[in-house]
Image 1 (cartoon, helix red, strand yellow):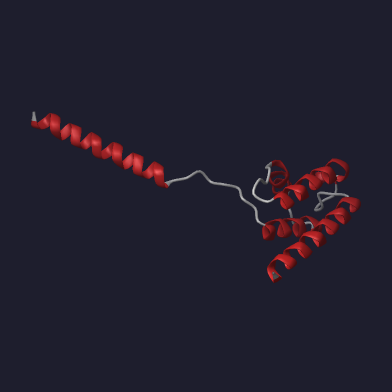
Image 2 (tube, rainbow, N blue to C red):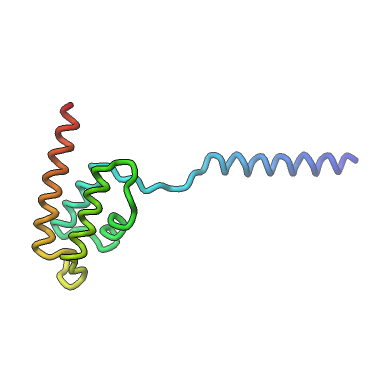
Amino acid sequence: MVELLLTLLCTFLIVSAVVAVLLRVRTPRYRLGRAEVITLLQMVITGQATDNDWSVFTGIPIRHDERLEQIRLRCIEIEAQCYTGSARPPYLLSAEGIEALRILLADLSADSKKENSE
């Protein structure tokens, strides 16, 4: 009888510990802010971004900021027209694509400055 109670107690403690750990551990989230998007666009313009950086940015929707999602969608359009990948290292986009990113970057930077001053 004592062994049964001891076994039940140990089982309860182990299950409780596992549940507590699972409640505290959360799945990682990819959540970009405006500063990170600005940095990424600057890296693409200067040829410092990797193909993976660009693919992750264009491949995951940004649901928490409509303006950033519009920029991401515009970047997908630019990619469809101007992507060069490894054909023109270290730049991922053609000159036209980089110029389009400069315009997006200027608009986003201006928006960010407005929000910071308000």
